[in-house]
Length: 199
Image 1 (cartoon, one colour):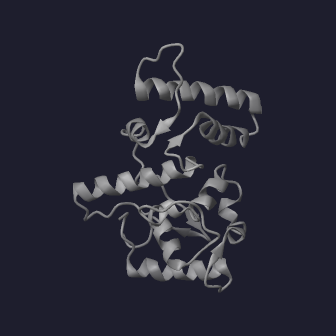
Image 2: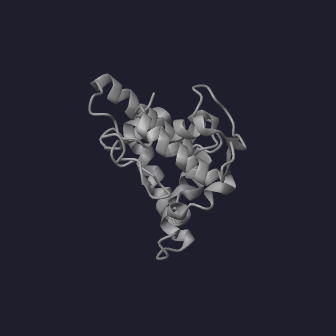
């Protein structure tokens, strides 16, 4: 389980859920379109889809849902909580792995267990093209070069006729092993900062 959510935060999350859903029992994708803090996020579509991806709230879940209830909302939001100061190293390691699995799922859009060049290119193009300083073709070249770098880190030397299928979750873990994700993976919803509650 990712970082536990305390009762104070449950109350705040329930209030936010009700605001987003307009007091309905479920949230749909169109409710997320009303969140100003997401409007200019370059990976906005991936963040919204993460809330409707069964992989993020069921251990062996597959596919997408059209709407979510409060329980699924809390489970997805818990991925954005920093680890508790009272966690053991084993719990911290498990929490880190679950956060990275969540991020991996955001980019493995076809749920085949691999972030392909096409999926990776789409993310890089989205991030770079929003800056307004790069043309789409330049962003594509940068994404391709970055994927070659990922391939060299993940599998080492490749022969000219070899094809790199993409980033597996194990490769993803290796790529991000030195990256401190725990305090950086936060989200703001209706001015709710997930790092400030229940410290």
